[in-house]
Amino acid sequence: MPKAKAHPAQIGFAFDAPTMARAAASLAGLEKRISAMVGTILASAAAEGRSRGVIAAEMGELLGEEINVTMLDAYASPARKGHKVIMSRCLALVAVTDRQDLLDPIMREIGAALLVGEEVHTARLGHLDRQIAQLREERQRIAGQAPLIRGEKIRDSHR
Image 1 (cartoon, helix red, strand yellow):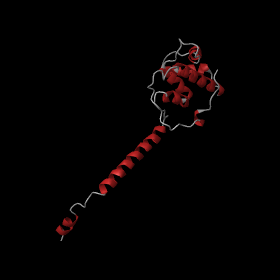
Image 2: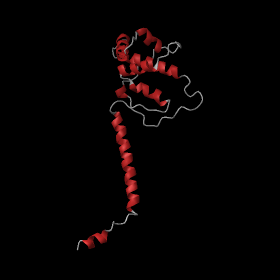
Image 3: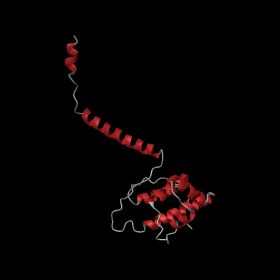
Image 4: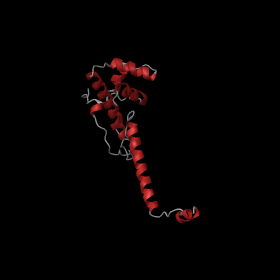
C-alpha cells in the first residue's frame, strides 16, 4: 500500500505552466499512476481514520450507484489491469476524500492545472490584472498621439 501523503492543505500549488501531452506514448502508464493515486488517497484516508467502507458508501451516494470496498481495492491495485477506475468514480473518490491535490499532477500530464473551489477567484484576479495592464498600455500609447478635442474652439464659443 502506498505511503500516505500530506493533507492537501499542506501541499502547495505549482505555478509552472503544465506541458501538453503530445509526444508518442507520453501518457503511457497513466492507468498505473491513477491506480497509485487511488491507493495513496485510500491510505491517507485510513491514516485519518476513515474506512474504505465509508468512502465507498459516500462515493455511491454521490454517484447514485453501488460502490463497494472490493471495487476500491481493485482500483488501487496497479496489478489488476482489468479493474481500471472509470473517470466518474475517480472524481467521486477525489471529491469525498477532498484530495484534489493528488489529482492535480495527473491533470498536469494533459496540460491542465487544477483550481479548487474559490481558488478560481484568485485566477480571475490575475486575469483582471493582466487586462488592466493591457488597457493601461493602450491608454499610454494613445495618450501620446491624442490631441485635445476642439479644446480652443469650445472655449471661444462660450464667450
